[in-house]
Figure 1 (spheres, one colour):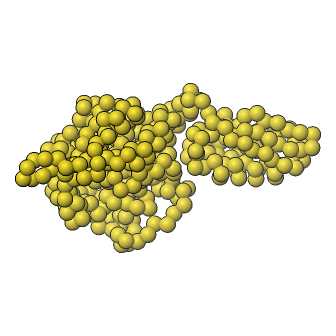
Figure 2 (figure 1 turned 180 degrees about the vertical axis):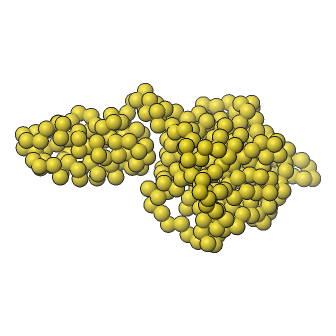
Amino acid sequence: MVTEKQVYDALSKVFDPELGRNLVELGMIRELKITSEGKVSFTLALTIPGCPMKTQMERDARSVLMALPGVTDVAITFGAMSDAERKAIFTSAKPELPKLNKFNQVEKVVAVMSGKGGVGKSTVTSVLACELARQNKKVGILDADITGPSIPKLFGLPSGGLRGSEQGILPAVTRLGIRAVSTNLLVPTEDAAVIWRGPMITGTIQQFWRDVLWGKLDVLLVDLPPGTSDAALTVMQTLPVNGVVMVSTPQQLAGLVVRKAASMLKQVNVPVLGVVENMSFYPCAESGAQHEIFGPSHVEELAAAIGTDRWVRLPINPRVTELGDAGKIEDYQGEEVKSLLDLLDGRK
């Protein structure tokens, strides 16, 4: 008859792909039972209920256990860790900058997130980076939207623009001195598709953090794709994120999805620095009136719902679109953009 020790030894070979630690070490194996007929059952306590890697971990666990002599069946149910357990794991999992890049020194990591596509996360990331650079801050952008990158286009950076060295990957550098990495700087043409599954997306984000020679940065901005799955989870679990700027638009649907993303941040213990309501209104040049094209603003109530009192409304500005499409986003300067800096400084 198979023993508990044999089961635990086997499960210690199964790793959480996001954290890089085995299931036994993480304390994810609960309520283990072994019957005299060789049936093994246990609860797999996930770090978050919707963990995108749970199917892979279940498959790997079942495979190693069925390979044990005497095991006839494996039954796995799913549970979730408590807030205290999750916090302890994520705190211990936060990495230091790798020794490989000993010249790296990143003071603050800020992710720009929404949960919903089309709200302007990349544009907000870009104009925020530009404003920081104009304030003489050393800034980097890690484009974590692996399959739909926008950062190179906005800054006019050419495809295939990344180069390697003995010390690591050299980031592209914009006219204002912003350092950037993106998959669209790796592919031969800007419209080449990146068709990757979750593990490759996860590995690429980790490599962008680990192997790029960022040097000394005051702020590293991470431009996240829509959703709360692989890319967002990887960033929150394996980068030392200091906080997140949430981007929304006035529509209540956008606010709903943002609240979902904020719920994820609460589970992984990452604070929301503030909310940006993009495309909030159109300022009439003649009358000065603010026309709420997409409906009335909900930013104040949205901010309160996700636990912050800091928010910014950004207007619809065709000039931003024009410059972004031309790869000249660095030429845009607007007074409203300066208010974004207040979110990073903790001021409303």
